[in-house]
Length: 323
Ligand SMILES: [Mn+2]
Image: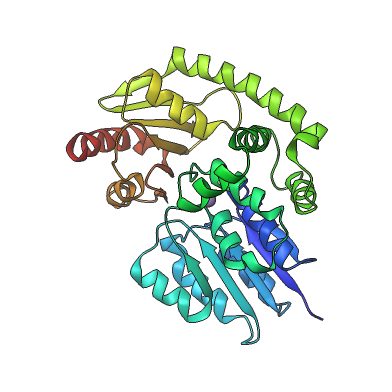
């Protein structure tokens, strides 16, 4: 039986890049995944011997890379694997991926832009808007591609439509409701016409303003690093990381959530060119059991709860030295 599978990330760039892939390969099975779990999903999917597998917006998790290559080996030769992504990867990772997958990789544009450009000739007109929503969602809206098309369509309207999605996604459980969203977007329905999504977006926006006030009153600062620990609401992590940099007048902001034995955090930079992905690669090497990475401007990490103060100290010293 012929079968196609799409795997993508749960944020807006993931949703839009996956939806564009769905327009290229209609009636594919659609799954959300993440860097730490992609190899397991591929293992599972390989059993069905699909014709096509399309992966987008999934960063390479260096610690899991060998597992990923082993998962590739489980597919029959006949399976075509497309891998489209914009997260940093090493030369070696790129070379290994190319051996088995049809790789389209650039840093700079969002994944949705890349999937759109790869399949442009076989896409309906409304796919372009999806690519631009993805660009806005991932702050990748200054590429030549994005600039050109923002000029073609009224960009203020595009930002409203994309903004509705960005905000609503703060309140949507991506494993459940996001699949409906994908199918509506694939049909060309505009976010402003999705009543439930609009209502969630407004609710999320009001919550966000409260989160800002909370961060303003509770953020702390160590040198050039502002941080907030355990905001009293789920989600809003990237946003509260940004806010904590701003309200403490810092170069880096962190929003951290602690559980019994672990701290998990989102990290953002502010007014500095320091590469957070590279910084984490350096610092986390010295912290056993930690993991993390992402983009130069936006990253995440998780580590043992007891290591959090030491991590903050190391990060502060590193930022002082390299920015
Ligand atoms: Mn992305």
